Length: 257
Image (cartoon, helix red, strand yellow):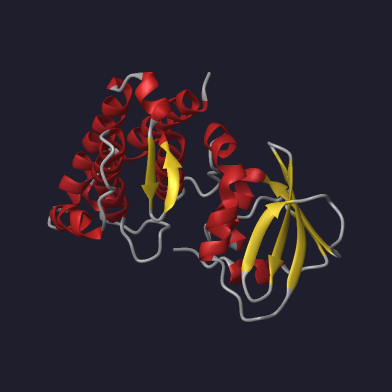
């Protein structure tokens, strides 16, 4: 199975989880808060739904060798979704999400494999675009699921696709006050070893398990949630092991968005 096929399969599974978690929520439930800061469940669903429309624009631009649309094309989409009622956001998001996947499925494999474009200033292919969609989809689905299941974790299929792409996100979202940190991050399920370096900037890169005095061992899904600012004390797995560093110092680096 190609990387693109794996991503399509995982996106379908993530949609099924979202539908199971949000499809039958009452109006009161969908208007209640999500894990995502300052957003209701309906607003998270609105973000997923508008994202489906935006990613379709990006995908079609790549397929047609056109310039990727920017914020000027996204704002009218956001305006439409922001004007919906919570119940409309709930139902429309699930429809739009499914429609995006149907569109991807309809594109011949060779066209997807040959897609090359510039996306947010850097070269990209279809795998990168679908990875970006999966990242936001899996995280925001968790933002909804965890409100009714506090022990919820990211699913294994999504984790397997996400864990090796954390570096750019960590560099972009990590915050630093100048206090240096050098931490070996060892994950399970799947097994990986990264070095987290915090100084004037933040980096997270594959590394050998040496050269630092601090070590954190944790499930890969917990590392992903840490980088996304979703590993607060109430949602930290018991198997997380920390030596030589305070986990709160790492939470301060990754404050979420």
